[in-house]
Each structure stands twice: as C-alpha cells, then as structure tokens.
Image 1 (cartoon, each protein chain N blue to C red):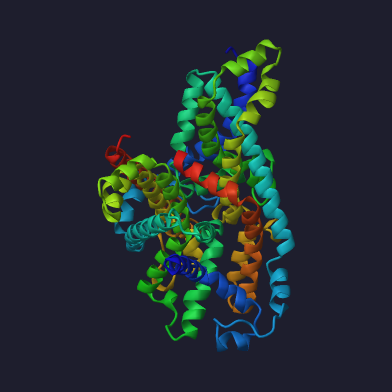
Image 2: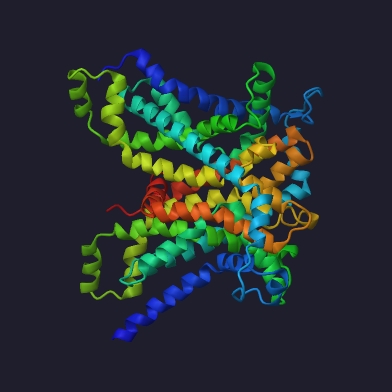
Length: 281
Length: 278
C-alpha cells in the first residue's frame, strides 16, 4: 500500500515530536548533567567534573545503604508477591463457587495507587498496632522494611494473580487429562506439567515485579518516608532527596543514570535467562 | 459430600475478607469519634458520624482535586490513544527506515525509569516556560503534554503488535473505493483496533490516576492539585487526626471503587493483555 509522505508526517510527527521533547531530550541532557556539579540555580555556574560524580557514589554511605536496602527489599518482595500470586491463581482456577468473588476481591489493592495504599497501611502499622500493644512498626528500621514488603505484596499479588490465571487457562485440557490418566497426583501435575508450561508467565511476572519493586517510590514516601537516620530510604527516594532536597543536581543525576543502568541490566538478564527455560508447546 | 464443598468456599471467602482488613479498618474508624476509635479499632461504630467526612472533604479540597484528576486522566488518555493508534498504524503500513528507527527508540526508552529523567525534564520545561513563554510547569495542560510523551512508548507498542496481525487487504479495498488515508484510518482501521484501545485506556487510567511523583514535581498551586497530591499534602502536615485521615482515604478510594464496579471485566482483561504484551 502506497502512502504519501504528507500523510506519513501528519500521522506520526505530532507524537514523535512530543516523545522527543518529553523523553529523549531530557535523557540526553541528563547524561550531560551527571558530569557537572550544580546547585540548581540558573544563575550559578555548573562546573565540569568528569566522572567524579560517579566515583563519589562509592564513598556515599547513605546512598550505598539505600541501594543495599532496596536490593534486599526487592528480593523479598519479588519472592512473596509471586508465591502468593501463584497460590491465589491456583485457588481461583479450581471449581470453587466463590472463585469469581475471590478474584474480584484479591485484585482490589492493585487499583488503589501506591501513595493512598501506603497511607492506608500506615494506619495499620502505626495506629492499629499501637492500639493492640504491638508498638509502632514504622519507627523500627527492620520492622519498617517488613512493612514495606507486606504492603508491596498486598498491592501486587492480585496483579500477578491475573497474569498467572491467563497462563493456567492457556494450558490445554488434554495435557492435564493425559497426566491424570497416567496416574499423576496433584503435586506431580503441578510441578511436572503446570509449572514448566507456566514459564512464559513466570518471565512476565518476574520482569514486572523486579523492575517495579526496584523503582519503589510512592509506598516508600507514604509509609515510612526517609525515616530517622535515613533508615527507610530507598533508591528512588535517595535520588529525589539528593536532587530536590540537598540541591546536588549533578551528583543526584549521576545516581539517576546509575539507577537506569541497573534497571536495564537486571531486566535484560532476567528476560534472557527465563526465555531460555520456556517450554515450547 | 456437600459439607466437603462448603468448607473450602467459606475458607476462601473468610480469607478474602481478612485480606481486605486494612480497608475495613479505615472505613469503620472514619465514622467513629476519637475516643471510640482508640477504645477498640476493630469494632463497628456505635453511631455513624459524618463529622470527619465533612472536614476531610474540605481539607483535601476534594471537588477541585477530583475535577483536576478527571480532566488530566481523560484528556491525556484521549490524546495518547488517538496519536498512538495513528502513529503505530503508519509505522506498520509504511515500513521504512524512519519507522523502524522510531519504533525501536520508543520500545528501548520504555526501560528508562522516570527518576532518571525527572530533573532534566523539569529543567527543560522551566526553560520552555521562560524562553518560549509557554507555561509547562504548574499547569494541567503542561502535565498532559508530559503524560502524552511518557504514554507514547506503551501505546505505540501495543497498537503496533495488533496492526501487524490485521490483513492489509481490507484497507486496500477501501482505498480502491475512494477512501483517502484520513477517512481510511478513522472509518476502517480505528474501529478494528478497539480491543487494544480498551487495553491502553485501562492501563493508562491506572497509571495516570494514581501517579504521584510527576505531578508532585510540576503542580505547585493549590488550585491545580490532583487527588494523590492533595492526599500527600494532607498527610504531610505535622499533626494528623487519624479519624479525619481515614475519612479522607475512604473518599479517595470511592472513585476507584466506582470505576472498578462498572469496568471490572475490561480492567481484568486489559491488565492481563497489557502485562502479557509488555
């Protein structure tokens, strides 16, 4: 089909122009910012410092702690979200009468945004826990981290459940029936047949939860904030504070670029590993 | 045999209700007095007082925030849908170097976290405001512009996949019948894209409605605040009255609950489709 150049430009250029202004240009100038020191005032000069913003992060204890904390939080969250979401999906794909009710209810938290959700749980972990004598969990560094994992799990388990349901429904009935005829038990069918066939769903869910958890911001801001002694500060919030709170625009931007590289690397590795293990139908 | 089936059903229902305990907690306490709340937080209220709702509505500036959130979400998504569909269709139907380049760029940039470009984006938007005199920061239209840019990647990506799967013969027939490119797209192609349009709408509603970081960077004046921004401002005060806070949270959930009630089927489908293709 032949399309004239004028139509091509009219159809594609508006969006491409906006996309370039909003995403591409800031990304490129962001790389430039990461090589200077600048306090954000237009009148003040930005000095070129080469890679020193990048080497500085390795001596920044507050940042290193935030990065480590985010990694640990992400590992626990990814595990608990996927285990719980998978269990949910197995329950709601049985013949139970209440399965649709369960799906509806378990999915609710995902629709409430991270910020509102964080505040809802703040009332649980601080006010409710105080009222039953468990103390405020959000002021204790370790417990605050557990609280973060709980809230993330609550938010995302229903979401990955939907993806796993789609995967389970796609398993052909005759495969399961053949297994039954051959005398496979519930767990044998689960581990030997369902899980290998669910590999594409695992890829999707791990990818989504891994990058979402690593980027966590809203729940962090609402639930704990930076916390005393920066004890609850995650990677994203650390970048935000470095730039907009401490006004280290260049240094903060270098962290933001490192953040991008980590996200890019983990998602690419993760996708390539899981893709290899997918079973061809 | 019958009891065997009833028990698992009851167990699942009980679990689901316990799962939503946090929502019950804010709901029940939002109606109670302060003293009653601290007496027993789990109990049902003895008398329903709407006192805290009145003050919460006022403090989060609900009517204005709701209006801003609706305008922002609806207008951004309408433009994202229209422009992404047009662009993706063109990219598939005229495969040239430019199409391949831009499509690759759109998909690649989906990996960039917002935090990586937030500061330079704000610098650029301020620059446009100062030098070109187009107010981009602290305005809802400016924010809509930014959402279009951020929504382009996923929108074009989803439409691209779908257009690839529809045969070109129908469009060729319409061209022979005298459709020009514009009417061909709107009369023939766009209606066929409806399933993807629903997916894009659902995913973008969940994203834009709840988004906090981007609007928190641009919207400074009270009149422009969206629901998440107003809620954050409310909780940012030094002392919060928890009854009032819980009432505020219940209020902010109501629009989401209404959306879920009416579009549940589409939401679940859209989320599943979006995740699988993303």
